[in-house]
Image (cartoon, one colour):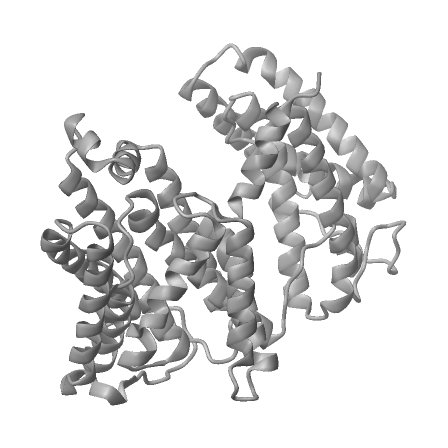
Length: 472
């Protein structure tokens, strides 16, 4: 009988084959040696981690001594090649067989241990092996082994002119060097994080807010003001902006969470617009002219990079992952169950012992904090902010739309929505937005309407329907 598990395995295999086929063509477009090196190491560690996961993840035998087998493979190949001229391919096979035999030999006594005793045993054994090799003169001792370089050849598996053959050996992923595409990727990840943050309050807790631009702007202004006025590093500005936004969210929540339905939505819009007007007339914060963040040398310390957008991409990726992980953790926690109960029926939830008001306040604080961190990141990314550019109503909409399109109140909805909407926004604006007639907005809006009509529950509903069909 065909099960859901078998279906998932086949799907994973098909996806893996497709990705491998695509990746095999990608390296031809990557010329930078440094980037090639990063790609090789990334894939190598992906394979090593997958190998460790077989024993440590699936079998539950947590080993912190796998460096032993990694070293055995390296030394077997290097010694056979340098001492006896054996090709590396046979060295790889020999190293694998030797490591497997030693793993079984060591496992005979070690698998009688449990928990931290087993973990400690793996560490001790690996350290003993390290000391032995450091004192084994025939294997180079502490000086190591210098593998002689011959001509470029797949036979000796050596390539000095290019690292592309190693990519084909490992099947490499895509690394984009085009600045415009990098910009789209950064914005996509940023809005995925922002939409995920918005989804905590509005999706899971059911408190639809269209004023989240307030927290986004607070994060941006806190970081910009602290950096330009007092020289405080942006990292502290992010933390400060997040905390200030969380406190303000709870302060505003005290009166606003007594409202329900469209009254609450209107209140969030009004408060955000009032904040926008205040900042437009606040001279110390630049008023309507905004704040121009001074550019210093490229550094992670000041979180400024003028030569490349890749550091911003990495941070946006981390931010999106953190927002997703926080949501994932909260979804199955006590708070997650409370929020869903409040969303479905606040009165029934309260009768069952859920403190409705406190649960709403908690959701508002977490959502505002993450949104403010996104605003701080945006301020550093663009190096200039004004009230309209970080507190405008369009930001509140852009945070909500990906979640609504992907699936409100779901874990993957904001991510899926952002991946579709943000590139669509940027591409339509760039290629058909130059006429000044708003054609890009018409196309963009029409696509959103069509998708919403076809899938009112969100695009995540496509996958849930497939799972239901498989289960039947």
